[in-house]
Image (tube, each protein chain N blue to C red):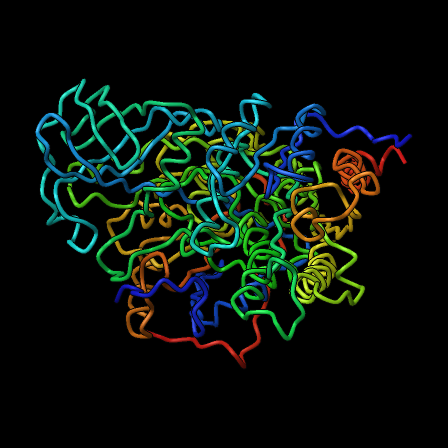
Length: 237
Length: 369
């Protein structure tokens, strides 16, 4: 059994891609844990449904792959929560669907994977960085969790666009952490494992769900990692 | 002096006028303003992000177009976004000088306004016919979504291109609270903040709802600045106490920080943490209790920001500074150059008698007018 360290009360958390798969599981668990949660997704109907399922959460309709959408999203996150302690960059794009060899990958599909998985997290992190650093100065701590993949380190055929974007995100996370650790903003890059999610079903339609990790299990692990990176947990440890 | 007409927060070549405690004036690259601080000082910035506070729409009773500029709010609470003070203009936009803007249609309490996806009602008329209290309909989240979708940063005719939020959020912007950017903070990039840390200079932030700078109407401008809510974290007051205990100076980044800290200061100069509403004017008659040094934009005589500078330095020096800045091509307004000024008399908390850091003569420029 995994023991999840307690999150600080009223932790302000934003989750991108929060209406399906791992993101939805994160929103549900964070809500149960007493966090103040804002989540972002493209589809208004799904956003409203999740917000109804978890009353008190803040659903934001927006596309992190759109440069023009980033500041309006950031405005709503910071406005509705009154600041931010934790950002979870979870929204992902597979690139070509069905997955394709690089030689068969359209440039536009690769670009969409890069802008969703790499540039979007960079832009959103930059837009909320002042708030995160403020949380750190005030002793609440600040964490950015970038959801990674084993495709970021392993060269799987047909996963080239996705894997390259996640490899870049992983490295970006390391540089962010080097630059901002001294300011109290910590960056995590974590591979949640192969999960039974809609994204995985699109990538590998014939996978046996019984062999895959449940999103709730992965969400609990990620929340545990966030809790361990926050100062309250460091004191206890 | 000319207005900076491009939305570049840290232009190459940005200038810095330093007025030291001996009233000596010198000119420097702004990027190196940290060189004018010393270990033990505390830099305090306003981390308010800027709201998209310009809302175009329609006055429903007449069907006439208008622009409502949000300009005041009762608190910084995230859910306190239903009621705002607003300044209303008639047809047109920022391309027209504010003093030439058309008057809005006659406004009355109870009138409804359609502002993009937002609907609001006028719930009060203020001390001027353009100054109203409005109340938005809908949930808190719907109002934030409406502002995000429809609002634009307030801007003026000196900048031709429409501003985006990324133009007006400082690098340290956090909670959206300001109606116009706390633009002195444009000087703070992350390299500078790291340099402060490396040199033993503290850094703290407060949140202050920086208000609008001009309405174009002399009677209404005379009411500026409006009351401005602020919040001072415990971490900031602790940092202020620690800096002062060690003889460090309190360096305010922008006039809004001065207004908040001086408002929150008890008579003996101790800054109290928590929320407040700054109602006072800082003028030549103000005895500063907290702030020792101010980094500010270049402000022209007659503005409330210029009046605040008079709390730091005498008029003769300010006039000399203005003449030198004009001669050297300093640029005004939010994307312009900067002034670093030492308070004319030690604040109550500044017991240190250390001399102002001596500056090397190699890179500075001094002028005699």
